[in-house]
Image 1: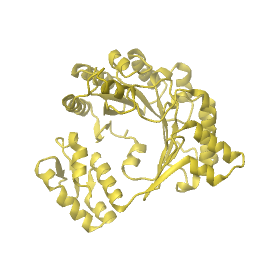
Image 2: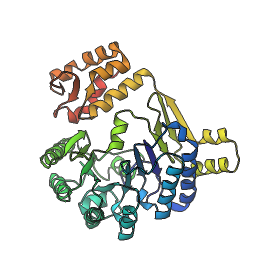
Image 3: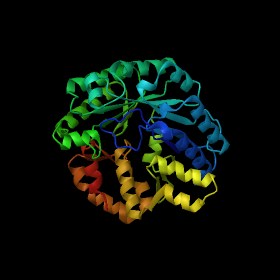
Length: 387
């Protein structure tokens, strides 16, 4: 799997703590560095065409047609992609970027899946979150890309925010399903430090979020989307049959992936995790040094850090991600990966949650998964089984 991080946005959303910059002056240097990184790091993934390609951010819909074309040319030149139409190629987009020209450009590109950052169809919500689009643009963006032929379409929605009443949330869900999107990723509004929202909450300018509202609106989310024919295949992700995100599913099942660009993360599928420097200028400068004949090893040292996961780390991550998925923990896979002692540990430490109805065994007894009652408590249930 391949992830390309485009670290630029028109403006900063109040809640966002991802790596990005609203200064587009360094865009050319960063994109040039990313093309060079693609060439250098090809051997970190298995040979052959990757199964999924994901343009994330930031805001990848800020890419011009020429910039996007340069990426696809590099992907083919370096053997990441052989042009196969069944490769899932996702691009994240903001509604305000999706004018007629951009939609036509994307429809004419190899991109075959769009993920649109709607967040809300409500004007007050969007102003509170400091989104660059309005409610009308949110609706029209979905309509325009569907009219252009994008059937594999995902949208993001945020619930539990200070301005999102239960009635507003019900209306957001109604609009989303009326627009016939195929996939919805929905997250509770998280107050992160070092964000505008975090500062406003810390200073008392706005109240903190409310766990009771989170629980109510999470339940409304599940009820509405299940009634509309969606399956909840991961705690925050819902899809009509056949439209699960293959890329994100790869993360949750421990597949190797390469992250290219400032702030991007990589995993070798075994024990090594690597993350690039979250600084656009340093990233671009390091790749310029490599291109100009500077010290290759020294430049790479400036680009990333890495960690090696212990067996306990890998077990904990496996339990956490498996419990978030609809399939749950495969007990035989857990034993084959981590040994009989770890299986006994898992069985022993999950007994209380099984008894309380937060976990259940499948009818065949081969998997352990969250119940509806356990879904809102997933982090705590998983942590109880950690070592």
